[in-house]
Length: 416
Image (tube, rainbow, N blue to C red; front, side, top):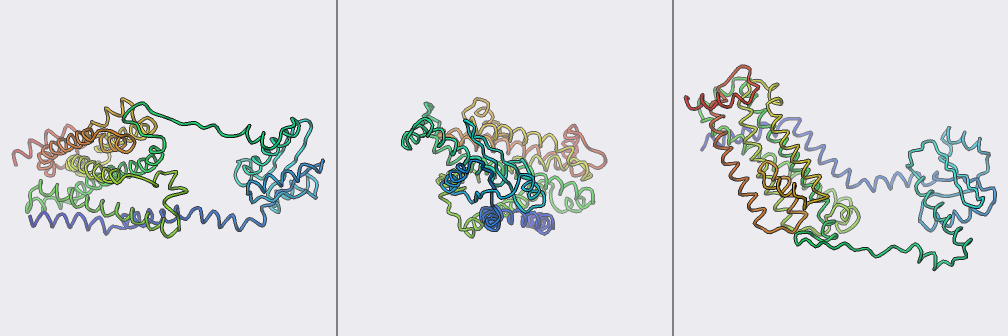
């Protein structure tokens, strides 16, 4: 057991001390603080530009500009509409040299028409606010022409009371779906990244030890099976630690940004009222998905002698993860689809797809438990096969880029 912990510690510390791991962790953690403060940064930039956010309006009638100013003020827009004191040619020249941002020409010949001129036509900046204000102005003018009063206009544009009700017993309400959809999406993305990144790290580590002939020294003092599971446990612990750092960074970013979890972006992404069971299932499926693919990655990594050959032999595993992610992300819109239900019981797809169903639907407890049991059984079978392949695979050198070498590795391990 002492040798197990030595390899465990070596696998953990070797990767934890690499520059790539440290830089990746710091960059991702810093990005959380950037995203959490993004609204503050945008507000700061907008605040600096408030003084120059002036819209020059060409209004030959002299009657439309005051009405436009009223609509902009009612919408709380930072755009300040002022009468143009220059010709159109001079205004265009001002846009070119950067002295003004945009100008608007208003005309009313039976129906209101507007022409917004700016440096770029991508619709960013104040263009959207101006377009909404002009649209509101058109509504006001049309109401006056039809003789409608303000209350009648408000009644005309009042939103309809539209509710959604699902007949299926497993379906959640629209409010519950909105509360969980964003969180499920983010956690699926994390699980997807984890089951690709960390098992690939194991395969590269094993192949690197074989290429440097360190493996020959290691297996002379510890069994290949113990070596394999120590590697899996060490890098798995590193993955859990890194995910914990990301989670803590995200939480602190939200707290330091002064953002309330009960409103704003948290409502959009569904963090306002999420069951604790969703987080527990996320951790469970993360661990099961990791061990499932980690055993497979160690098995494949033991077959190659050069790190350059790892990616080619890992392609089948990558395809499994990619297919699982496609099913999961497409299933967010239709979690009750038959193909999603079937895929949630396939062990290699279950970490992503069954977690999707748990987060998005009210399914009986036996369904995720059955999926978990199938995953545990698959991990056991893969562990047994992987141990036999690993025992012989670590002794194989030379070109080895085919899955057919698994049989050769098993025979070599049995003769060892």
